[in-house]
Image (tube, rainbow, N blue to C red; front, side):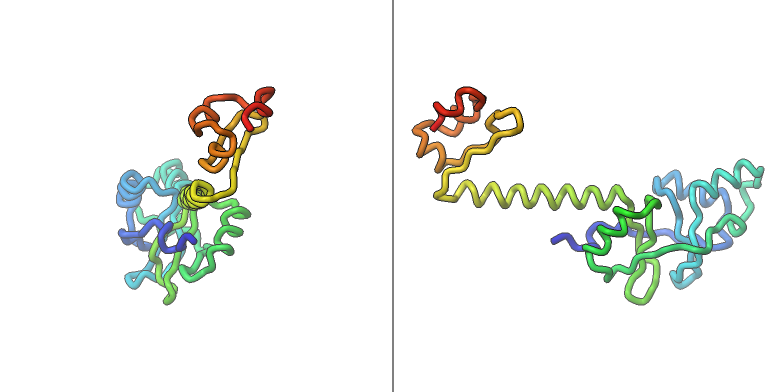
Length: 184
């Protein structure tokens, strides 16, 4: 099972009410994040400064030394690091927000969770399950032949090859279709 802690992007910079537009621009450019968690000096969450807020500051003609304070969104949903993984999946599936702020057990900002992080973790999990299933099938005494929707052979194990009297390579190189009955 994937650990939530393993898919969180760590926040290693400090953004406060006093951060300037120039500093925020530099962080956005370097980190490529969609939002910056705004904290006090002790990592307590005060809000977020988003790319939309950044764009609005530019459109409003704010000088580079202006603070981001008026553009900070104060009402922010956050996720605690001890939230069960299944709950995280539900939140990500239903959220219209692409990035969430992650808090530790003391409610201090420790990271960000992006939908990209979550999709990557789900793909990694699926690949791990696929590898485990293939290992089981390779060592099974049960003959297994799998085809896709077009009846093309996509998997055959050694047990099936032994039963059919053919090598796995020769089975995999043939389309199942009309020749399926001749494989076994």
